[in-house]
Length: 42
Figure 1 (cartoon, rainbow, N blue to C red):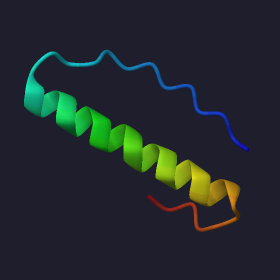
Figure 2: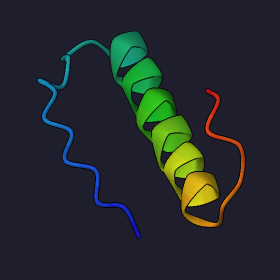
Figure 3: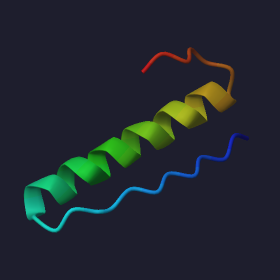
């Protein structure tokens, strides 16, 4: 399984933090799908 090392400075304001978590969630879902042999498109 692919290891993703993402180092991003987490923002301090609430909205940006929410968007940050959503982005990380999508990256994890995408990488898990690729690991299963799925499509690699974001």
